[in-house]
Length: 582
Image (cartoon, rainbow, N blue to C red; front, side):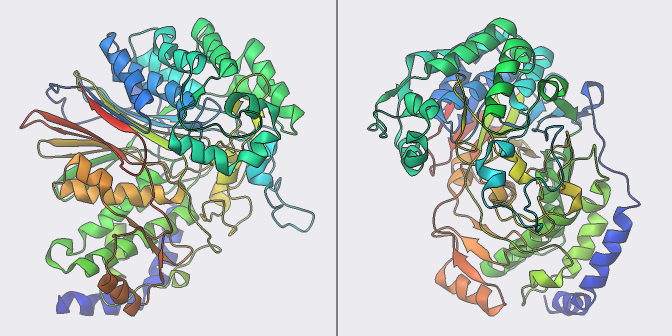
């Protein structure tokens, strides 16, 4: 260890020069490719089919909807459509049809892998400084609470692509469970009750929301049946006419009219021109494990693989627990720094993905890490200042008996999106425009900072942190992901490390978590994630360490062990979800 520390101390004196050199190299490296259906990646070999199917999602009724579709003869891709639609009904805090996200796919028959990019994009009328005042400063709340905050939705297009290219059932069959939940209702859960309570004043003033979720202006008791007839009608329209009808004709015109009535800038052309894309997923390796995740415009895969590459250079297995956590924190710090500086929509900017996910680049970053000292974030070239993180979005994981897999992270951005509902549709309006860098160095609602790579431009997709992942090591495969805004990358990083160490799905989902995101330069932690001695030791190294204030994330994890034939599905105990194995 002493020899390694001497090398690190020597290297730390040149860290700033190394980071500057990396910036120069970035312009010379190829951007990550945009892939369509014919260009998606194939895993080395197709694996034997599991003896069981499994689904883990953030709500028991959504997991049950997916399992219903599997029992009806559908595959994992059909089930993903069903779960997505059901979550829009029973978990409106996390996702909805006006949202978007990424669907990571693996086909069991031939090992084909693809990332379906259903990320929202900016309306054509969007401008670089649309959320700034005359002095060039952000207008409070404009990028989060107004109709201007809404990007053009991607989730219906992503669901349509899944159904058409990979599913075997009709869209009407896959939407049927969600339609029933919206039409006949479901019992109000404690989690949704509490979320409604926090927004009660705003929702009571909005008749669109109030008639669906409130009773005489008040949040009803837990267990009250919540019916959403307008959302049911919207889903029925999509079932009759296809998911593509979200973007054309009568429904599209109603959506645009409803958004513009509230001051938004959507157009019929914006909807008609939207396309979900298939992109090549990112593939990395860590201590004998193969890691697959989402490419830009998600930052998740790049940051996850970069952090793992850094940690592979460090002696995690032969050190004390607090130094191991220190190394993980330092890897998180550097990955989030690069996220802020380099990443954006690859259709608009050159993303230096080859550099950021290379082992040589990681070796340089690892050499700048001292075992006895934290690296101040302001010593790394970067942008701006940060703020706080948040818990929204949703994730689900699916495995069918043919070995098909889906890891899907979808979102409206914040809880209930902007909290506004489009008239007569039952659809909450997303506030994804806040995920752009509305001004260089100014943090978004999750405390994430960005630069020009993630600046607003018409039909540009805003950068995301979603990190759906497949991890394979030996005979074991994990399907995982989580909500959590800026926390997501770190949550999936910790889950990957636990999986590589042999932990079960339940252990991975329940493990306490700590987090660093470059800015703010603070280590935050859940209860039980750091002992008092570890907190003191990290502070002695120079870290600012603060309790997170609440538990984070909602990890939904499936682990398939081919050697034993077992399949585990674990919902995060922090949430109300359920893992089902059939």
